[in-house]
Image 1 (cartoon, helix red, strand yellow):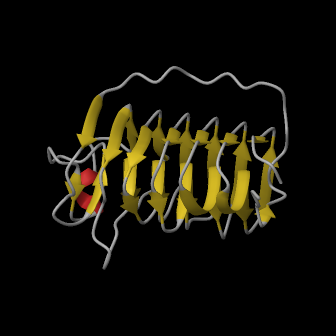
Image 2 (cartoon, rainbow, N blue to C red; image 1 turned 180 degrees about the vertical axis):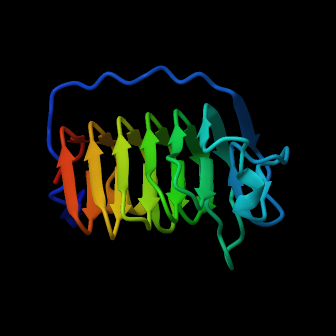
Length: 226
């Protein structure tokens, strides 16, 4: 029997969502297990690995159009690592964005998966139009298509992200997550489609804000027997 233990109330159903077309700037295909470290589509290394987020900084505060395809384990049974379509961490008043990035997991074990990951310790953060597709694999923790987190007294926005989980295992799925403990969070127009049965908790769009939190027009579709 296919069972979902928790469906969070941050998901609201709508009929259709139109997503922006992803123009791929660079794509990394990981067929062999990386020697160590997390992997990201915007990594400067040919195998996708990076040792610190400082390696993923760009001339601006936006990372977009990157893609990574996973066909192997990311780490070992002693320690699995994360997968990012693209990631950026920043400390400044400017808006930090991770937009139009993608991850496809075809095989392997890993820790967590992020389509687009944006973190700003001071200013705004947003994750827009990112996508994740999981066709198989064991993910120890969470899967997020768009992930926007800020520690400032500003805003965090996750919008128009798409997550499709066809097969595999994971603890928590969220198409879009916006988190800001001291400001306003919005998760909107995200879509999550589940065609598998080994999931604990799911959310189409998840927003947590210390000042305000808004989750609207998110889509959750479960093609499984309850």
